[in-house]
Amino acid sequence: MLKYRLITALILIPIVICALFLLPPMVFAVMTLVVCMLAAWEWGQFAGFVTQEQRLWLAILCGFFLVVMLLSMPVYKNPLDLRQIRIPLWLAMGWWVTALLLILTYPRSAVLWRNSSTLAIIFGVLTIVPFFWGIFALRQYGYEQNQETGAWWLLYIMLLVWGSDSGAYFFGKAFGKYKLAAKISPSKTWEGLLGGLLSAALISCLFSYYAPLNIATEKLVICSIVAVLASILGDLTESMFKREADIKDSGHLIPGHGGVLDRIDSLTAAVAVFAGLMLLVF
Image (cartoon, rainbow, N blue to C red; front, side, top):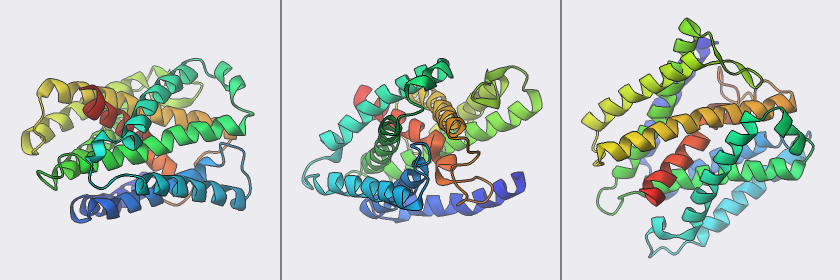
């Protein structure tokens, strides 16, 4: 499994980097929209959709909703000032606080939503839509002054999350003893969380030194720490929904990683929270 994960990562990471720096923002937004539609397709399982037709309609509705929001944006205004972006990011921060409460009280909390397709879909909207707008907002960040600024920010948050995830995996394997959330994901440990934070700190230091981020150190540290913690929350939240749906992987599209949601679960939380903190709070 680790072999396939490494091979897939070696293929996907250069593709993502090329897309970040070479594609125009709107083309990159369309690519992100497709990823979100695939995520919505997989999320249908959490809502109890068992037929491909039901899940296909959910993916189409997700794509249609995001396209309508994109087309409603005035081209003459700074995208970061628009409610189409600000509202989803505020909602995301509220949703991930709620998700934390659901995790801390699981499995008791599952009584409130496990038999409700409507709530499952709402949870999916609050996960996928802000993720899309977080990606979009960060890619547009500082675009008028430097067209690559947003690409650097997205690359930073992606490497931060992937690095912390890898650090948590290897630290957990080597030193893991105390369970982080045994009822949701028995393999995750507090030692792994510490390893993930240390890995993220290393990436943050290196990136801030070599990349043109142009940000105060205190702001970067706070946003990065919260984003990494949010990424763990995103991972645990998807694991909780998968456990209730009685599935191991959200899909089988990515060899060694499972489905699209299995690959972006941490990013859905980290990107939205990081963008919210960067653009709305600080």
